[in-house]
Length: 343
Image 1 (cartoon, rainbow, N blue to C red):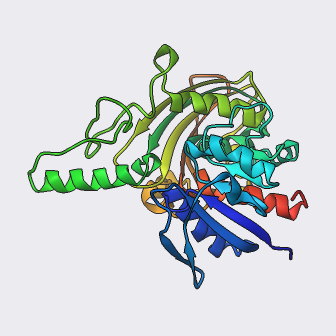
Image 2: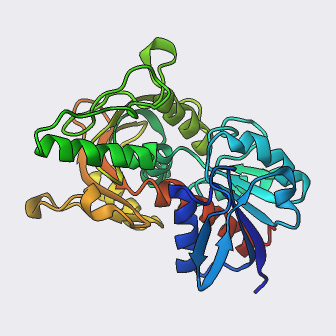
């Protein structure tokens, strides 16, 4: 099998580290591996598969002779993606920089792999919550078109980075030890006001935009339309940060144009690649972040009818947002391209 020169931009962060773990787990066919980061992280040494790699500061020239550039996300994407493409690399980007660009395909490989072929050097990875949702929506959408979606998310703190994980840790310890808590990261480090996340819920992820919605909520709306290539679906979202370390959960209410039974929906979900159905109310079996963290699949349960509309279903969906919601999805895009001779 041919091997490829791979660069990881943001190699020292949570998603970058997950890229490395998955490359090893999945025996990804790499030849040379280049680990890139900001100037602050340059010089760090990472042990990987029996070899030591020195993290380099990313520059435009970092992408010479690179076949696949995996971008972990952040502001650096806009800076370096054009340079990587200029040098002949295919960029698979985990930031929001290119997701809504009409010339950039937005891909969940199980859902819309055919769109990969239209890329012009950059392929966008969707928002983590959108990936998890569309994995559950697609098998049902294939049975009957969707008219409307109401989704509420329960998102783990790791979605806001290592600093948010550390802050939850510190706050829990402070409360247990009867000390004052400090809040400097959530809802967003860039905001002028911060709230405790320990033993709390924050109904704000990212900044507010029009009509009282947040950017995170509107990402789910716009990205779902693009991935399913159906702009007629009504979608409304509420995204909430919860004091869970890892794995996002979503309550999804779907109104369909035609009737789909619970049994038919369950069978479609069970046969869909990358989805595991855990749905046995009598035995109290349903997905939970505690058991879905560090798993590749998206888990679906609480499948039941919505009796308030003619054709409605309710789902409870949980998935590891660092794996399938970020690094794994990007690596699967690269694997699809390799398997279909698109590189």
